[in-house]
Length: 112
Length: 115
Image (cartoon, rainbow over all chains, first blue to last red; front, side):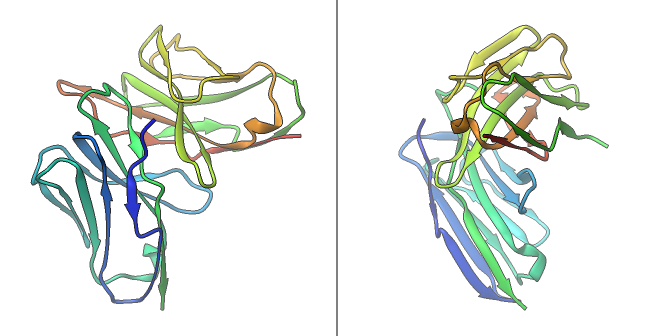
């Protein structure tokens, strides 16, 4: 299946800094999801987006569904050590029915 | 607590010995799915089910079987495991809304090693 282009692959930041990561696709998506995965655990849903242009927040996290419907970004403000983990984007193409396509993840490291 | 559970969490087995990984969800979700996660390959879908007695192949179904006899359970069966099936496996479930399958909720994972 198609892979999403997620960037950056990894980030090393200082506590308190803001973080931004994004995903792009060559196809039009009707759903964008952002997950966080801690080592040895399953992905946990952070934010779900369903409409082009939609901007949704969950605490210090904000995500947007791109106007072109081919991209999405996730921002984390004022990062803290527990933000460490792998962040995945996932999207559902209009024509895919139920299938989710996943990005390869952004490994975030936060230095105290 | 709404959740997806998987058992076992860790399993080491030998080539050819049949095994089953169970998955159960308590959210009354119609949709359930199995993924495997491998370094450099990300999450890949193995099988999915839109409802009881309805299953379909994902991207990497070879060597796996599933069944959906009850809404809450979706076991993954490896009839004759091979070393290339060593991986981290996740079960996920989702409600089906008017617009289709949307957000998926994942279980904690099963780490399988086949020697």
